[in-house]
Image (tube, rainbow, N blue to C red; front, side):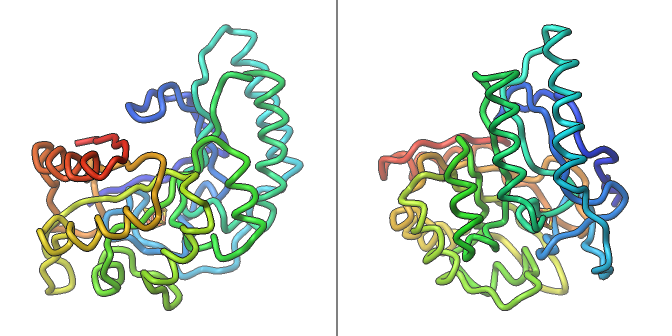
Length: 257
Ligand code: SF4
């Protein structure tokens, strides 16, 4: 199915139900998806094998972000969130921590009321400098799609050997100051049935929610074309039923169906 790449370093603002008027930042190449996951549902398509890629420098990023924020401010535009997402995993950028510092400076100068969000697959939070950078922003949104290694392997195809135990250990370093994000879907992939919304999946996943204590849990499902065929959305009513269980544990939720 046809997926798409963000063709700019800075794009938008575009309206997002979760983040309001969101100015997008793509720290990855504009013509190539670069990630250490290969999620079967990734709207940017399959992850390529080329490791020799060029990433934008922090100097170029600073210049472009300042120019963009200035134009938006001069035109009385609204920016609710500055969101790092784009064509892959933003925290892979070797200067990610410095880029976050720069973004905070520019945000404070031009749109002091806006929030900074990073959509991350949580693979780099074994590094203290990434944790420190993510702790400086309002919305570190960290992915965990299942409590089972087998499901993670199937849904996310991590490049390195990654275990749920390791991710949970790293999430605990945030002391609850993060947003947990989980994609729910079902279907068939690689001749295997996949459904991370079953009773067994949800029971185990709720145990992790209790352990890592996120300040918010975002539950969502497929909204655009996916690289893998034969995947299906989870119904809004089922997402809400899962969210109810999270709420009963005392955690806030946000559902996008
Ligand atoms: S972590 Fe995000 S960018 Fe990377 S493959 Fe998964 S959905 Fe795509």
